[in-house]
Amino acid sequence: MFDQIVREMAIVHARIRSRGARGEDARAIAAQLRTAIVHTQQRGIDAPAKKALADLVRTRGRDAVLYLEIDKPNAKARLKQYGIQADDRWFDTTGVDYATRNRVLDEFLAGGLAGALARSADVFERLGAEIDRRGGEVRRASLQLDPDFLVGFCAQLQNEIFRLGMDAAFVCAASYFFPPLASVCAMIEAAIGVDSLVYLVLC
Image 1 (tube, rainbow, N blue to C red):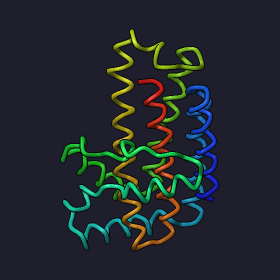
Image 2: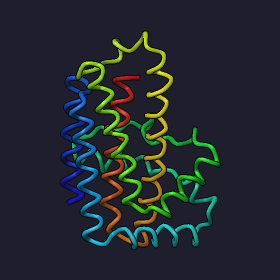
Image 3: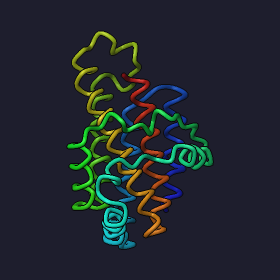
């Protein structure tokens, strides 16, 4: 199931690259993430995922986990299998401060995988609504004179990319303790790719 979701995300990614971002694209990703939540709950993945992350914190130490980074060569190789050409900048979380890292980790430990996916789905829903509000299809040129959009929405989107980067780093590393998370890792990386492409197109 997660593999199929990544394939669907890759199709959306290709559409955005070819003709710009539309509200329907963001909603399609939100729908895929909500499908993933249902699958996660049906398969009982959430509790083992939280335990795997807790095991990771216990074995490596909290601060080490807070500063985990995605293995960029492996991430790029994974996404290439689905036709997504990843950029190293997608996975850079060096701009995230210590307090934010602690909050993201605590939220993941409390809300689990389903909580992280629900948050991201909500972000994509808001993104779709924002694109619709601006006429259904938006490109960077039409936003150059809109400082509120650039400072407000673009900053929020960048923060979500950072958060997804941390989520992916947590999930990918925790897959050592719970191997089914490996496919979830690829799905989150694909979501980062779509978010990053939308950011490039709009911001």
